[in-house]
Image (cartoon, rainbow, N blue to C red; front, side):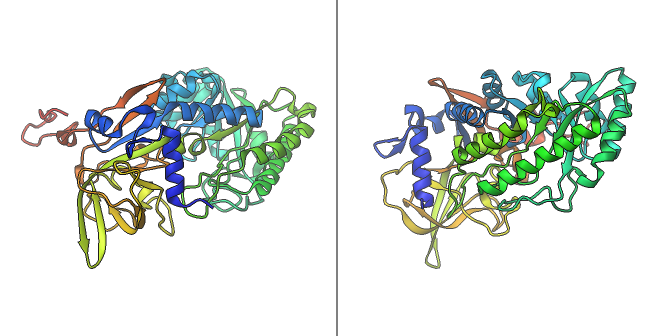
Length: 450
């Protein structure tokens, strides 16, 4: 089984490896990128993302819907949309705006989320997206009322919370008590209510029950259950379904003792399963899709931060960096982890150095929560060295508390087709004043540039 250092070195190799002991993504020394864009910054590898999207689509034989929440950076979304290989799953009006700006076609966009506002429903109807995945009986009526007021129709997916749990997963969002979807027992009422509104077109079924799934057999059984729910839905509706959204949640092996999700094994079982259902007239012409985010982009990102200080305290080596939980909340274990574990890290300046065990790497924030790990094997750095936090392509920039302590925000940079592209410049200290009101000038915004 691979160690965290093995994983980091493997990912570094996929980015482009090293030269003279320095990380050289796409052949460019990391020190040059740090000089040009400043630290900290996120670095994404476009070809790795594109190749993963293609492989998933071709291996599964289904459509792929990119979960924009994983990384809503416009450039990342544009490269996925430009390949015409994926649709988009959005969960807010902001994500809808990004998806449309990136070039995803409205007929390839689905809108999910348990708390859609009236404005979000209006925007979905106005843009004519393929489906709003409704999550309650009340939401069906609200969506119908919105569409009626606008004089438009809108597609509907019924998000069902199945009775059966998906075992062998990380965070569960179905098969249990929660705010997501409608209980399977409400399926009949949901279909009846949807069909009672002429503005609504029942597209199909959406089931998303878990994330960080690694076990193939439970996931296949889960997909079989979704197909059975879908057939029941078609029977209740009296017409074939246009869509089955199987959710996703394929696991990414961030931590020790985690191995890669076996996509080939799952695909073999899924294709066999689907072939037995595809011939059913109730699914004639149906779009089968998986909504994936983390699995498509996580391994294609590295967060690069500079060492500010190295010190010994009570026999422990502490490496303090210029970025931390304020920029990368998930990598510091502060986004739902019960037991905090370290992502794969490397000293990008000393790739040939021998890792020393037990090093603590901490960010700049004034809290003991701001640590990437307390026992990390790392080639001992000096001030000025660059540290890379791998598996940082998903739930990084947008999932962090960027306003905490008012540090400047990190840049986002994309490696793509032989060049480097600045997707978002790093912030400035004075940005914290942008949009705020100056009390000394009633009714006027602060004159401080933002």
